Amino acid sequence: MPFLTPGLAFLGRGLTYFTVYMGSAYYAITTIASGHGVEVPAWVVIAGAIVAAPVFGRLYVFIRYQRQKRRAAALGARVFPKAVGAWPGNLDILKDSLKNLEIGYPGDGLEKTTDIVGYAFNLDIMYSDLIFTACPEHLKTMLATDFQNYVKGERFQEGMGSVLGTGVFNSDGDMWKFHRSITRPVFTRDRIADFDLFDRHSDQVLVKLKERLREGHAIDFQDLMLRFTIDTATEFLFGNCVHALSAGLPYPPKAAYVPPQQQDPAGRIANEFSAAFLRSQEIISVRERSGWLWPLSEIWEDKTIEPMKVVNAYLEPIIHEAVERRKNTLPNEDKQAEKESEDNQTLLDSLMDATMDPRVLRDEILNIMIAGRDTTAATLTFAVYLLSQHPIVFQRLRSEILEKIGPNRRPSFEDLKELKYLRAVLNETLRLFPVVPFNVRESINEAVWPSPDPSKKPLYVPPGTKTAYSVFVMHRRTDLWGPDAEEYDPDRFLDDRLQKYLVKNSFIFLPFNAGPRICLGQQFAYNEMSFMMIRLLQTFSEFTLDLASGPDEATPPAAWGAAPGRKATEKVWPKMHLTMYANGGLWIKMKESDSV
Ligand code: HEM
Image (cartoon, rainbow, N blue to C red; front, side):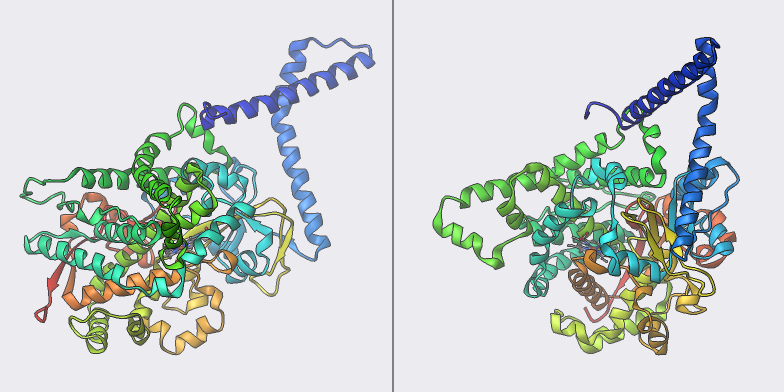
């Protein structure tokens, strides 16, 4: 029923259940009463049934819990400890979680429960099981060893569907296999090691950067990286660059003088797309956080419709051009042969070999845009932020680059293997700021997970249960990474801490996920990020954060200063929707190196 808003559809379903319940209650009560020769007025029956509804609800929850305890015991396990909120249905936990999405630091609120029961528990929101874990042994089970038993699930797909459609991030079973089989061949070693692509776009980045910095302004590095990654990703995957880098870069919102910008229409559309894409991802991530009640916040409208109009208008020409290209190649045999050449096949070409359904094409493009644009851009943003705060690391990394590659030479694929410290810097960034910080699966069948506390019984996962996990929380656990887990120190990926922690248990570090659903773009992303970092550090000898240039929301809330741990000292605001990003951007100045 596409004309129904999510809220009205939800209420419609609720009304149907309620009508069936009332009808059954009415029938049961009047039958029993007349069996005893008693006549009960209709209004009494109806009032009684309404009053009894919450009682039946609680009874159902109680019986379900007892059944889970029995099954757990039969399997030699125990049920998950529950988060205990102050309000019925743990509504206060839900409220805090939504508030934290707006003004909190990632993971805020969870510590109230982790401090008491550890890193695996049942959040039990609105009497619905929601298991949360930040334990490597559970992630290993879900993502790898018992992969078949954990899907994204229908509830997840319903909330995400109006944005992600049935693309690779939002599908299970055959549809997921289809997307994965089409996407994987694009990432051959030869293709991801072709650095011409990175070279052309990073040159453009450096030109833009220098131009703006020479005007004396700070730049929003995150915005620049989003343009860089979308241009490279669209060219690599669709054979059609969207030229986001050609559009004018934003000036600092508080700049005293801003020259009149001659923004071309393509640039304006690219900027509108960025804003709408961000908004649509925010909406679906609020849905995911809100649990099964989310449709109630969208009674009168599907909030994704407006931003998705802008997003779809942006994607339309990419699809159109690809379809036209295909039409022009099909009848001609020579061109057909060319199309079939493996090297020239883009992701869109391969996809169109399998289907010309515009909806499937759109979904794939949109999902891959999130995968290929936001992730790498955010990691580069956090990498540069951290380097700006750690000049010793910056200088050491720069020395490695200048020593192994020199001040101007274009790096090759082979060079990257020599740059061990660069890889450690990227990994340390991905550890502290994994761009997919929270994720979720749903169990198909019941399962038993190892207990994080070996002195206790294993944990029972009921069938059809949402199982959320956070690599963000796991990556900062002191018991897994050592007492300095919250500190930025790339050496932990090189010195004896590597053996002590990571080699012993590789599942403690999962920025790219694991198992059959592991990120397909991992190697492409490392190459792209390494290339960009090398070019940046060849060109610039200093990074300085310039908070005063950014909008107010780029600075973390003052209240964070009183918090324990990293949160208190953070200079940027890591915020999340589906992926993590620097709220308000990363406003920074860079000093050009004398040797350039
Ligand atoms: C730093 C960069 C990146 C990080 C940290 C990252 C991380 C991830 C993670 C955590 C997932 C799993 C999502 C889930 O299961 O819900 C994923 C999936 C995926 N990533 Fe990446 N990614 C990065 C870059 C890229 C790039 C550049 C591309 C492509 C150009 C890409 C393509 C994909 C695809 C296609 C999937 C879906 C895999 C599936 O469900 O089978 N990623 N990525």
